[in-house]
Length: 355
Image (tube, rainbow, N blue to C red; front, top):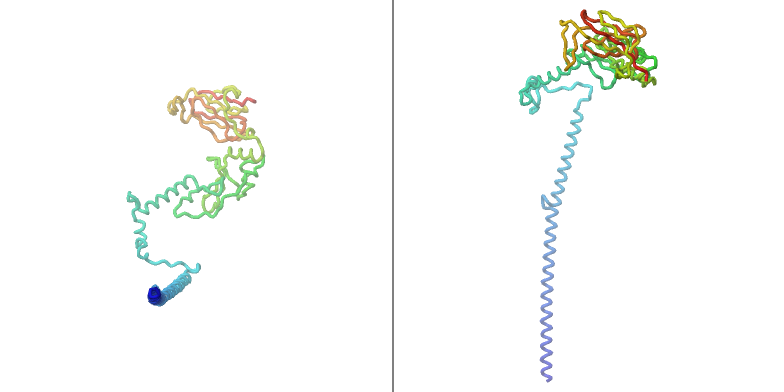
């Protein structure tokens, strides 16, 4: 029994010795592994610091290159700015365009074909200028800053164009007085040497900018009817008191006594208009047809006169049955006619029936 216990104890001690040996061996392996990892990390850090171009040293070199590039570009920009003209010296252009900047001569530019039709650049430019020239010559130059005026005159379409140093007149419709005419309004609002003149062919007032230099003129676009409407608003006058009459319909007029047409007929009774009936006219006069209406050519004209004996622009006769009203007066004092020899018919004055 005792011997058995001793043998068991010996075996236990032997096992303990083996265990200690194993633990010592494991410790040495762990220590060796740790030292290897530390060495690898040191090598990696060394590569990051000194190895170009991805290491810290390479980054420092690249930063220096970028800094030098920025410095050079800044110097180039400052030099270019310093080389710009100061605004007091004329710009000197190269005698020939740089490479890639078009044709070598002006003729090559203007002879360049534009579009599918083969039109030359110079032809398109000429057509554009001719269109503007014709428009100005026929209708004058409309000024965007003025509602009441246009610049007119043959010189505006001349080649080369001579600039006109003149601004449009400044007038205000709010300053129209109750007893104003277009002439008194214009003369007061924008006084000019010689006063504003009336062009009888257009019934518009104008003044010449520089009579000794050209015929260019400022034309006031306000005709008589427009002026009367402006007067009604500005002076508070009802439009029925200042505007010319219109035919209101047969039920709202009173017809006067018909008078036979003749070479020179004058009706001296107040009226708001007349009805002209043409029953015959010489065949040589000719005529136009408007559907079922007949209008003779060159058979005569009429004009309304005011209470001061002044006449307005005439109105031509033509239709076999036609109504005429004054254009520049609210109420006419009479009417005067002229007719060609052989024209027959009647003229009947009429007045508005009071409501």
